Length: 475
Image (spheres, one colour):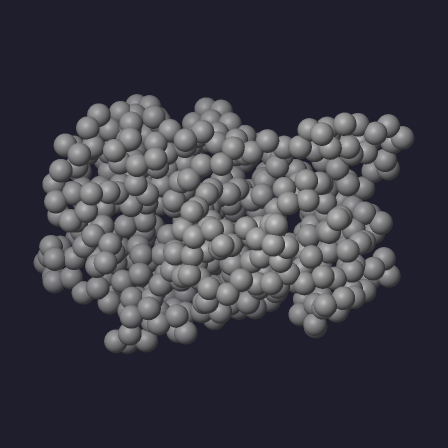
């Protein structure tokens, strides 16, 4: 059991809120987590339950985004189709595979659930995408049609060119702010594309096109698109993963934005993302793309302590997002690997906020029902661990550095700088300046699994789209 001081005007989990501590010390239990392995998790909420579906028909559910229950681990365990091998026999044969890749489920205006599936050969863009429908989120789903192909099958009357045409995988289907239905998709190959969809059939409105190109091409390592609308600023945010998904692939999360669902999208420096691609004639040319996109998160190590050598994230990526209209909270859901843990992966959920400039920043700690608040300088000052990211596409782990946040507004230690706490931290930007680079973002009190304590954190982003995490070290 963990002892914490109760603050007189906030709920138990909203500690360090800016209120004064009462004299009563309350014994509280730490948050409970139950982890699942769903690679490429795409989230949907049905009634009071969150579901995530990913590659290999991995499927899980949760009521609080912390304790997850695994429903299916593989195609052989699939419960969403009555007989997936039989129903998708032609697709398995075409894609020369025995599994499915990243899937997505969307509830249409008619109340039914539409599951977008994809199958891919893996070492080449030989893929097929289709849709199935059900009256229930948990199925059974019945195939409607497979409607998009890449690879050897000519489509739209032209031969497939993997440098400019998309790999038909990684779908995300969503309604825009005007009620139009879209599907964004793509991985490596010719890049990320978007199609307007018919929400009466679940199929593309234009059956003779791959849609509009948004970014990528020439086999650059950009994939896993997901689009989230922000109703407060009117932007559509296109999340993608750069790099390779393996533990040594340097996978990391990036975002761009547009006033229109079908683009054009730009990063925080104003770079047009439609021009971001590998050099002509190259394959996996990371140097051509690594400077672009506003980075959200990459590889990092919280601590070098050998007893906690798995603490941190390796190749976090392929995210989805969720917006809770009642609480005005955003969540980032993704899979990640871990330091010195091979290819083992697990789902993580982090709360997400937007800066005054309109760019998302993500809590350094996994979601534990924390609520952002306005704090005092006394609650922020102390010793912290700092994680300073960059935009290089490598498998390097960003090493922890130690700093002290002083009450006089300075920062000392392995890195030096200044800091400023916004009077309304929950609504305005606070800032941390490290080596003359300004990071705008939020201070947030959250639960640190590693220290088993509630601690203060800061998450911010620079004008060049590089994130910064700091986590108070209470040990």
